[in-house]
Length: 255
Image (cartoon, rainbow, N blue to C red):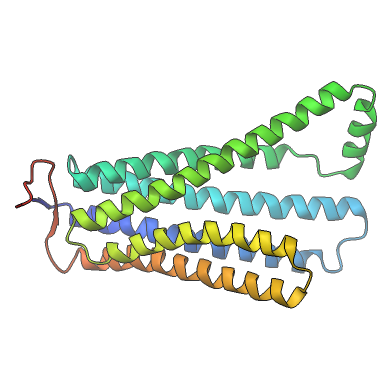
């Protein structure tokens, strides 16, 4: 076992990771509320509506990027603090995942910023390219492939995060990491529950059944998020209470 001496660094790392989703969620909600109140009494034309929607999208993209970057920086600190240990390698993998998410978030922010805010631009663009269906189809294909690639990556990342957080919980004496692993595990459950709810929504016409399923899915998502956030924030406090130890690769498990 290796004793981790960089307690302050670990605390800072865990606080960043724990606060990242809180900042993102609260920021997006705040942006939406400000946008809604700004729109009341100020939207007179469809151009104003498009401009307001674009502003909200930019604000949401910024808050998402902030969350990704905070998480990435936290995992960078944690991986350095744990060094060449099982937990350190797991943190390095998580760092890579959130680096990719940060890059994706930055690209989406740039795309959102450069999106036209006038509906006339879209109508003129469509009219201009009606005669050239190949270019129009190519643009659509690029977007579809891009979204599919991001979706596939997100699914893979979800399972990797589950696996690596479980490894960290097993390889360290930080008990709060168990809640982090539970949050990641329930995040995987949310993925499958989302698929199930989508199938139910498509097969059932009763809105009451649909509403119950969606509320159940929301409850599971909230539970997973609470476990994830609470685990990291709990770990930030726990590292100050006792020495932090991590398993080495040369540790021998008695048979």
